[in-house]
Length: 607
Image 1: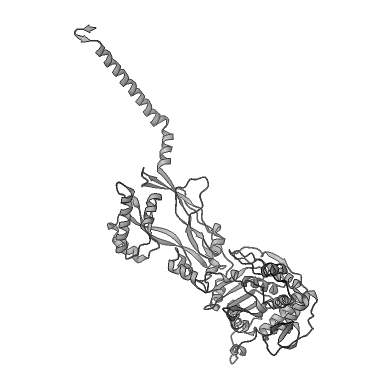
Image 2: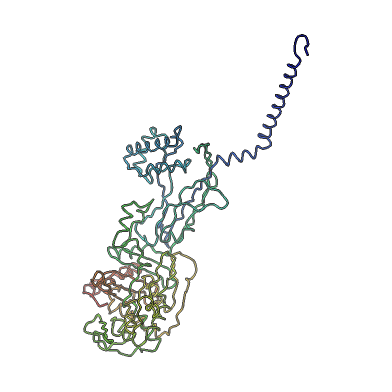
C-alpha cells in the first residue's frame, strides 16, 4: 500500500525497532537493579571470596625462666631483607617477573656485600605459590647490613626491612640439652577458618622447648590481603591479633647449673642435681654441649654437619639418653637387697684377699692386696668387690633385681623431657632372647658390683641417690616448677636399721673412704664412688661415677656425676662433686694456719 508516495511497511519496521529497544532498556534496568540492589550482598561476598586471602600470623613464643625468675630463653627482633614482588611485576609471562626479582637480588647482594641465601628456584616457587607474601631474601642480618641497605633504599623499589621474632638464649650454651632449640614450621590451622597463607612459627625441636611446645606457643592471629586477578597484593587489613604464649618457669637453679657445667667443662660425661624432698631437678648437664644461639634462626650447614659428625656426640643428652654400667655406685642396692633378704648381718665379716673366685671366673678388687676380714659398713666405705660379689652369690639375682626395680632402674623415670632412655635391668628371659644364653651365677655376681649387662642413665642414678637420701621415697623427676609436693611414685618400707646402715657407710665413703675428695668444710656429705670398665677399640677404658647427697642428716640435694674415660670415681669425679656442693652450700673458710684436706694432693683412691 502506498500513502502519499511512501510504503507503510517502513513505519511498522521503525515501530518494531523502537519496541525492541524499549524492551532491551527495561531488561537492562532490571538486570542492573538485580545486580546492584537485589543481589548486591551475595555478589560482594563472592568478590571478597575471590580476591581476599587470609594470612595466619603466629603469636609470640613464651619465655623460659629458672626457679628464681632468671630468663633462660627469650625472644628478640630479627631483621630480614624482604622483597614485595608486586612492586617488581613485569608484563607477560611469569618468568619475566621471576627473572626481574632474581636479577635484583644479585644486584642488592653486591651492594650489601652478602652472599645469596635463596636460589632462583626458591624465587620461582614463591612467585607461583605465595605471591602476596614477602619474599625473605636474607634473614637475621646485622645492624651494619641494615644501615648499608638504608643508604641504598631509593635504588631498590620493592625491598624493605621485615621484622620477625627469633629465639634468643641469653646464656648461650648453658643448659643447652635441657632447654633444647626451636625451628620454623607451619603453625596449627585455626579451627573453622580457611587459611591461604601463613607466616612460619617457632616449633620446639628438642628439650623443654619441645616438651612444652603447646604451652609456649601462642594463639595465631589473622591478616587479610586483597589481591587482583593475577594474585598480586593490593591492600592489607589487620584482623584478629595474635596472642602470646605462656611463660614457663623451670625447677632449674641457674647458679647450680653453671657450677655443674663448670665442673664438667672439657670432659665427656653428664651430671644431675635433684632435690630429694620432691624430685625437682636443680641442674642437668651433658658434656660436651653446644651454643643454642647457633640454631637461631637455623644452624648453618657447616655448624650442623660439624655437630652431627663430631665423635664426641654433643647433640646427645647423656643425662637421659646415655646408658652406662653404674659400677660400684650400685653396691648400696645390693647391700639393701642382702640385708632385707637376711643373707648378711651388720656384724658379719667376709674375707677379701683381692680376688673373688667362682669356678673359672675371677673378679678382682681394686685393692690388689685385699681388705682381709671386712664388714658391710666398711665394705661400702672401701668399695670392696669381693664382699659384694659374695653378697650377690648368697642373695641371688631376683631380690637384687626387685630392689633395683623399686628404686627406678630398668624403666624411664618419667622426666618431662623427650627421648629419655630406659636403661637395662636384665632378666633371664632377656638374656635368653638377646644373647641366646641362660642366666648364670657369675652374671649375678657381676651385676652385684654394677657391671656386666646392667645399664643405667645418670638421671636414674640421681633419682636412686635421692631415694637413699630421703630413706625410701622415689619421686618422679620434674623440670616444670609447680606448687605443692612432688609426685611420689613409690615408697619403700625398709627397716630403719637397713637404710641407716647403708647411709652410714656412704657417709664413711665421704669422710675417710674412696670418695673423701667430695668433702666440703661445714657440711656433712654422704657419697659412693664407682668405675665401670668397657672396651673401646681393643683398649680398656673406664666410665667413672660418684653419687652423693648432703647435708647428711637432712639432705637437700642429691648429686650424680659421670665422667667418661676417667681414672676412678674417687680421683676423677669426687673433686667435681666437691665443687658443685660448695656452690650450693658454700664452704667454711680456713682458720689461720689451718690446712685444707691433706688428701687433696694425693694420688688415686680406689674405686
